[in-house]
Each structure stands twice: as C-alpha cells, then as structure tokens.
Length: 140
Image 1 (cartoon, rainbow, N blue to C red):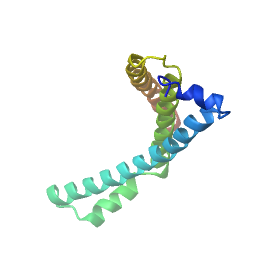
Image 2 (image 1 turned 180 degrees about the horizontal axis):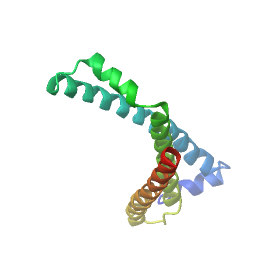
Image 3 (image 1 turned 90 degrees about the vertical axis):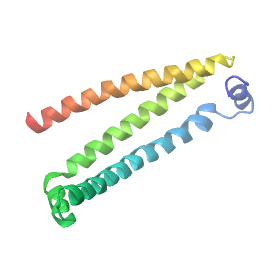
C-alpha cells in the first residue's frame, strides 16, 4: 500500500491509516495468537496420549490423570501470555516496517526481511526474559 501511495490516499480522505490498517491487524493477532497456542496445546496433549496408549500401553485415563497431576494452571497462563506477547511483537514489527517502507517495490521485500529478523530477535530476547522470570518465581 505504501508503494502505490494508498496510505497517502487514506490520509487525504481523512482516514487515519494507523486506525484503519494497524488496529484491526493487532486485534486479529491478539485473538489468533493465543487461540493457535491453545489448539497446539490440546493437539500436543492428544498426540502424547495416543503415543502413550500405543507405545507404552498406558490407558488414556491414566495419561489424563498424570497430566492433571503434573500440569498446573500457571503453565497454561505462562504459555498463553508468551503467545500473546510474541503475537504483539510480530504485529507491531510488521506494521512498523510496512508503514516505513519506501516507495519502490524492492523496499517491500526489504521490509519483509527486516520484519522477520526483528521479530525473531525480539521473540528470542523476550523468551529469555520469560524464562528468567519463571525460574526466579518457581525456584527463587
């Protein structure tokens, strides 16, 4: 949209580009990031249950009892919190790089590459911070 001056056209029409373009994307990623994480958690538990049943001859009831015994609510909160923060990192970096792309088509590829690099860097950094805080909370 930056290349074809569509963002300038929105501003000319009196439409705030941030409110029109970025806010809906941030709302969507705020919902879908944790939703995908929940789906991944439940699919992972179901897959573990199938493997335990097929390879270890453990009944699904025994597997579920052990899951309930070992996994705490804090584990789910931790995972969902991380997914929400990671989603915001991706959404904000993509929006920032996209809005600051220059007017030629090559800058779109450059902005995309920079978004990926910045997102991965900050996700690793924030994940390390989460791990440090979790270690101090649980063992400190």
